[in-house]
Amino acid sequence: MRIQELARSAYDSLLRTRGRSVLTMLGIVIGIAAVILALSIGESAKLFILAQISSFGSDQLMIDNGPRADKTGELSLAVKETLAMKDYKRLKKESWVKAVVGQVFQTDLLQANGQARNVTVIGTMPDDIVMNDYKVEEGMFFTDDEVGSHSRVVALGHTLADKYFGQGNAVGNSVKLGSQNYKVVGVMAPLGSKFFQNLDEMVYMPVTTVMDKYNKEHFTFMAIQSSIPLKEAQPLTEIIMRESHNLDNPEADYAKDDFHVVTQEEAVQIVSQITSVLEVLLAAIAAISLLVGGIGIMNIMFVSVTERVKEIGLRKALGAKPDDVLNQFLTEAIMLTIGGGAVGIAFGTFLAWLAIQIILSYQSGWQFTISLNGVFAGFVVSTLVGLIFGYIPAKRAARLNPIDALRAND
Image (cartoon, rainbow, N blue to C red):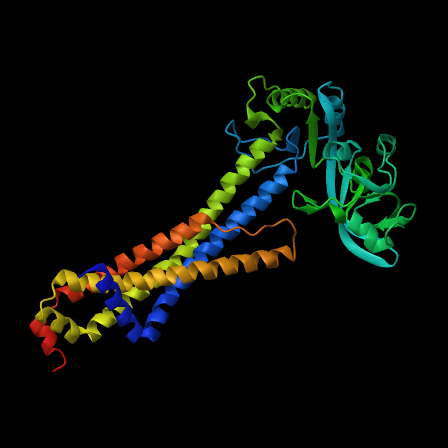
């Protein structure tokens, strides 16, 4: 039979049992939609994470607590805090270090004007706004002298200042963190999010004041802005840190360090590897529904063969070859899966868009994107499912003896 005749015959057959055909396609629709949704959400998450990491400047190094496991760059799971003020002072002396900060994060209850809420308190240094080009909208940021004197002053994120005091009224007022009062010296301009934190809802405080208040002896991390290429600055920083920590490690064995230095490029590589693995895992889980849908198609095709035994016998008696019967049933199976794949791609695209809108209502910075790999996989897999799961019942139909088929149910 010609392709046009096969397609028309298969279409007419599926149309006669449209209810069953729709239910059969449903399994493929759900399977393809799940794959599209998983891959698209995974890709959107990857873009979001990479954008957050990219906000860490390309001329900056980050120093974290804990060693790398080895020279491959794999990080150790056991982390002991070791970064201290002495490291900051040592790095500050280097001529190639344009700026350096040590930071500490803490959560506490912020109270002012009869309002109270839990906020993130970031202990930092004036170089922080220099390195990241942060702007102060009202008042001023605290100074190095205030860091040195452990002053009880704060700068409020833009959203916090507006919620507690209204626009233009925060500077000069006091807020309470825990049981202690702090003077508001500045309000930050809108900054958005960075490292998965909303900077507009943070309280900025001298790092020394935070360390005193919460009994901290070490920084959460440190950051350096370099005036020389990072490929030169990174090993120099590691040497300085080993000297500061009195580490005997001339061979630069990362496992012997109690810190690790990361560039933006390395962070991007690590995140890309992790998100790629997660995308594959999500797609594999979603693909299970495709297998279920394929089994459903095979079962329905077996039922169809059983119901159409006499039709098959009549066609063979009139001269139809086994290949003609095989091709017809395969065409029906493929049409079911391709149709289901097309609907599944459209449905999966809609679900991915809806999911991103829901995520955006809780966290900004996400963008809707469709995985082209998912779309391609949807068409290819749906076709393969039709071929693979439709072949066995189609082969059974092709092997029927025409005389036995005509006598069936007599």
